[in-house]
Length: 148
Image 1 (cartoon, rainbow, N blue to C red):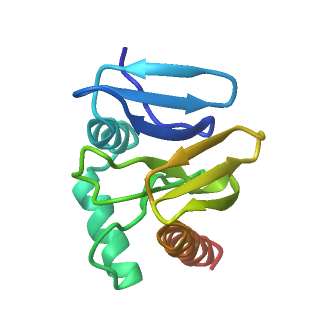
Image 2 (cartoon, rainbow, N blue to C red):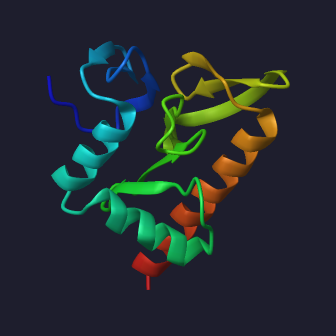
């Protein structure tokens, strides 16, 4: 099954080798691609490349690593990584779907989505806070540019 990130996507979580667990509004899917491959394919599906989107985000934010990605422009569909995008442990989170997050311990954070679903990611609270802030900034800058 091929999967493209959409408005319904909450998170893409690594599962077993080269497979992912995709959380959506009411469903959960196992996809036989890594989270990074799903990101690459989704960017291509919506008319760009992952590297093009990454380079644009870097330029806009002045950031070098763990940059959020605008997967689809018209919906401002922004997702952010919890670690290096190339890591086997990287979880991708859809910014617009995040309602809140809570510290579990030094290395784990609970993400609460707008539909009350929750997942625990192996990432510090501070790191999630930084990633949400960075992704929000990217979203805001792009929305302001589009409204001119």
